[in-house]
Length: 201
Image (cartoon, rainbow, N blue to C red; front, side, top):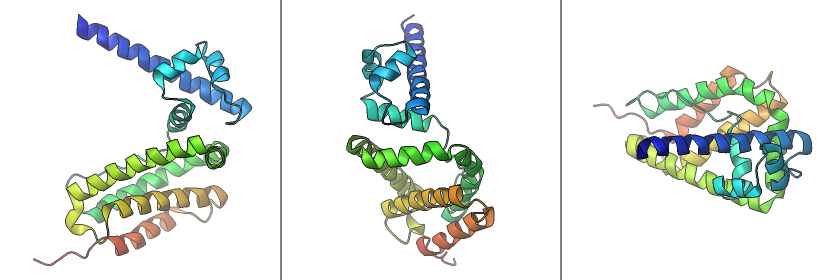
């Protein structure tokens, strides 16, 4: 019975979070990020500010969750046990697949980046999120590809994120130039510098 109650509570919490995120996206669409106050978001969701603070650490975390809900993160299909070069190619393929979605959200992405640069609190929240992601990726690289790395794993994590973000930004400006071939060539060229050559047995 307790487990069933816990599942129901968890479900309600997830529904509340989803409603707050949807309300945030609605408010941002009308008022922009600067105008997306907690009061406006709570009113749109039919909730109180307290409901926001019960589910998110603050406005920054809520805005980041709304950004994440756009489904613009990469979801590479990695092959267990495959060499790092193969995994990097999977990242390139995922990036190619994500670009059309990014194009449909170009205005939202640009406004988010500009607002994050102008808002110190949101930028700090974003930086902490990236720091955590870089650490997790570095740990994964050490665990699965230590012998293949030609530079520190955290540096590679930062490079991968920067390369992906740069390609997305350039694609939004010049989609006819950032083709699938360009993306694959960029990732392969980067791999040449960060993956140690295989040693013959």
